[in-house]
Length: 255
Ligand SMILES: Nc1nc2c(ncn2[C@@H]2O[C@H](COP(=O)(O)OP(=O)(O)OP(=O)(O)O)[C@@H](O)[C@H]2O)c(=O)[nH]1
Ligand SMILES: [Mg+2]
Image 1 (cartoon, rainbow, N blue to C red):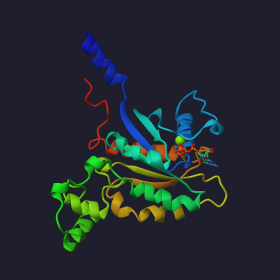
Image 2: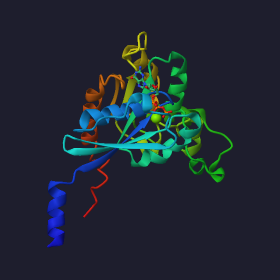
Image 3: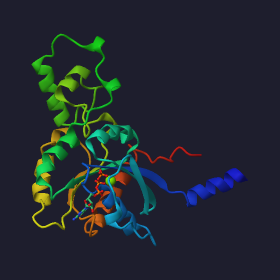
Image 4: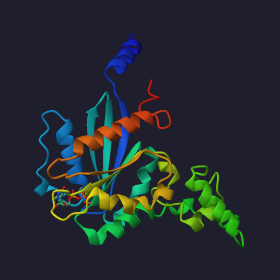
């Protein structure tokens, strides 16, 4: 009887849960964004005053129930020394939000670098026994071609040492993030003279060969005023649902 009731409870009440990782450099506005999203989508939730938000050392979590599913957000600290923690969360993520401070032109190159050049854990490095004395140019060219047209997605398809040479063990191309929807947010649009989507998009498009095949969007947002929050979250929800056969919800195996 308990099992039956428990099953019915889960069927009618429990929502499929998905995890959304929020990354970006320090000061990009990740925590402010999470607070704004929670405020927008949670009845009776009065968000934290943005002036009270301080730099994140570790992890902030937050949840939103929307369109019949639950999104669990992980907002990680963006300071350089904390970026090494990002990849611990990749395998569990169903979507990635990458936040850019569009008002800080000087740090755009750093933001792009963090986006595409985060080192993976040492144990994932190529085993020294596997190292060969040389790597053929044709192998590298073939790997690039295969990756560009989506034929090769990881070290099952490309030898580890070729991958390493190409720097394909980086954040957005990490195996653990394969196919995960990506929302790049050009934040702080309320600041005069900030970069618009038209300027931010081409910069991240340069990483298209690393982004590979996945739902991907660049949107303008102001975490401070709340403009653009709604559109971004709804886009992400649609993508997560579409991708849920590949990345099933966390509670799918619960009995
Ligand atoms: N004008 C403006 N300021 C913003 C916006 N979003 C965030 N800020 C400000 O940017 C600063 C940093 O915001 P945080 O949310 O703490 O940034 P973070 O990305 O979480 O930073 P770390 O936790 O250090 O990684 C704060 O002073 C925010 O008030 C925005 O849309 N517009
Ligand atoms: Mg923060």
